Amino acid sequence: MGIPRERPIEVYRVHPAVLAIAVFLSLLLQTYLPLKISMARWMDFPLLVTIYFSLLRRNKIFGIGLGTGLGLVEDALSRHYIGMFGMTKALVGYLAASSSVKFNLEHFLPRIVLTAVFVLIHDLFFLGLQHLPEPSPPFVPFEFARSMVSNVAAAFMLFLALDRFKRLV
Image (cartoon, rainbow, N blue to C red; front, top):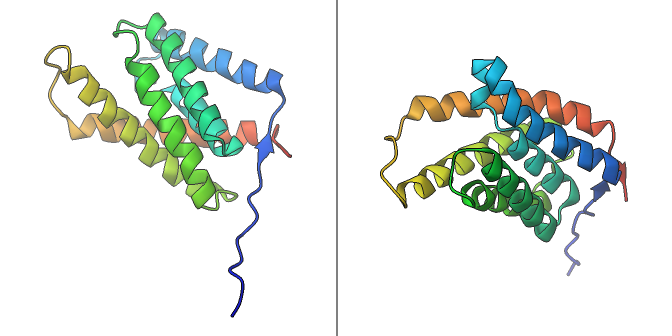
C-alpha cells in the first residue's frame, strides 16, 4: 500500500512595492482610461490584479483582503453603491486563491482560462447585486462575452508583465 503523493505547492511572492504600484496603476487605469478610450470601459483592471496576486500567493485571506480593498476603493471612485465591487472582488479573490491550490497554474493557459471564468463569475455576481436595491438593466449575454474577451486580452499582457517580478518563496 503506497502513500498518496501530493504535488508540492509552489508559492510565489513579489516585492511589496510591485504590489503597491500594480494596485495604484490598476485603479488609475480603471478611473481615467475609459474617459479617453471608450473600449476600456469593458476592462476591469483591479479585478485582474486581484486575480493575479490571489493566484500567485495562494492565500485565501490575502485574496479576500486584496479583493475587498481594491473593490471598495473602486466603489468610492465610481457611481455604484459602496460595497458592490468590494463584495464581488472579495469573492473572486477567494475563488482564485482556492483554485490555485487545486490546479497547477504554473503554465499560462490554465491561468488565462481561469481568468475568463472569474471574470464571468464577477460579472454575474455584480449583476445580481445590482438587482437588490433597484431594477437594473436586463441580462445581455453579448456584454458578458465582450467583457470576458477584453479582460482576458488585458490579462494576457498584464500577467506577462507581472510574471517578470515574481520570485519563489
